[in-house]
Length: 394
Image (cartoon, rainbow, N blue to C red; front, side):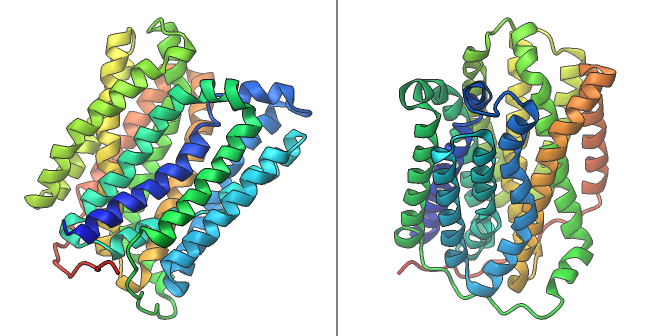
């Protein structure tokens, strides 16, 4: 990788990390805090406050992706981060659960994921793109683990208002990274009329989009069960779950790196991709058959994070290679939309299946979905390998 590519990867990963840290810090503590807020005794509103962010993300990712194709990546990213700052400020000043929901909606309206990943594609050559996507995906996983450790301590020290203010500060810091650290973006070719329809008609792109939908549906459906399994089957109290998550995430990073190297340097992206889907299927079978006990749970969660991180690195890289240059933002917007829909439906369907058919049925359903995904993935062509000049930093 050139210095400009390394700088692009590190800075774009930092933008994701700064933004996601503020979001993840809320998750472990908000449901408890909500009881202290007027209207927080309504669990439906509490759930809406947590999930509203994901819903607005799902609705706006395509629009932001298309806008980044038309107006440029950096202006769209900065605009989205400013909306995130406004939403964080509204939530910090909120005096009731309804106003917090408004703040969360505004936070979600800063749906910059498609624009950031499109910019990563613009600034890197094809043969190094999966590495950069892996850097971005790894930063999200690491921040998730850190937030599980730090959130209770921060909440005790600065309260929920302070955490929302912290999210605003982190988003401002991300704006600084966009403007002063991320290399200058190359011009985006003008998209012809009907280009988004072409994205929808592309069978290769749609199979990849279906894959990210399945991956994140499986992820959130699993996490309907994982905390309870760690308490009941692993004998680990809720505040100590980070002791499983953090080692699992860190070990998965170490195992992910060789897989990404093989995918990139040896042109084995399809083989590595399919192997990760198979590993996802094995995890679901393992959780169903051997899901009791702390060590078993730790093993399956580690293997899940390996598969998840490999797929999170390969999927956007593959899409950026297949999508036309003038429609990368639109293609990645659709990708991120289906990712958000999968996150939303996974929690809802996972809870419904567990309630009506038992926890084991969730693992069986997720395993079936992984098997269907594998069958579709087997029909895909390997992504093209093209060497194009990397963008240089100014």
